[in-house]
Length: 307
Image (cartoon, one colour):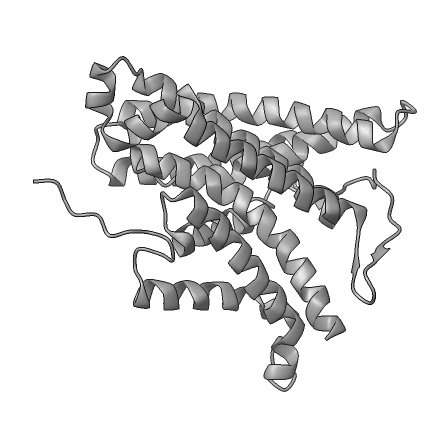
């Protein structure tokens, strides 16, 4: 039972980071029906930007939590500016093009960002400094680190803030109107281009937070680190129901739990044939099952085509 509860904690932490990235996917898809495959690379840029700031402030004598906060704010600004430029330069000109064009552009942008990051920050993995206390908190058997507590708390606050923004603010109403029908929303005084840019900026900020938390939790950063979390977060968004904010959160948490429990019990289940490094297969098995039994996702709804 101790192993089980420990894997539950690990799964919640992992799922929280997936949920932050999945929200970026689902927000963009909900408004312009685009899968932004470069979103995982935004996470990577956030982590590497944070590492650069942390390295620069390492000898400043500032407390570790303050250095982490400064690096997080810098990463959010950089990622927000990057996603704004990506949307304006790569996606906006293809707004009315066939769906295959922006999809290929998104994949090309992902490769471009990886290559630029490799040139700027070099391809070798870099250790991310330990900025928070490393003494684990004992929960009566299972343990949790201060960094993991920060991830869970920060994720809960950000998700609550996002739900409030979408459901209670003027920008949120504009986002929902644009998602429903951008032409009618424009006639009502909404500026769809501004709303779409704001959506990309918010998604980038969430990805930046996830990237910094990922680096702080696992202690390493490199130019290719965004690919797998981005793919898993996309899987989580589809799992919960692409375009549904609550679905992205549920999908991310479930995916993290499935992956963590798979890593903890995969060796025992297969008699040692498969180790914990094969845990990724559980995520995609879960995705296949959901898409087979409920193609719209766990919280998605079937939507009839307009006449």
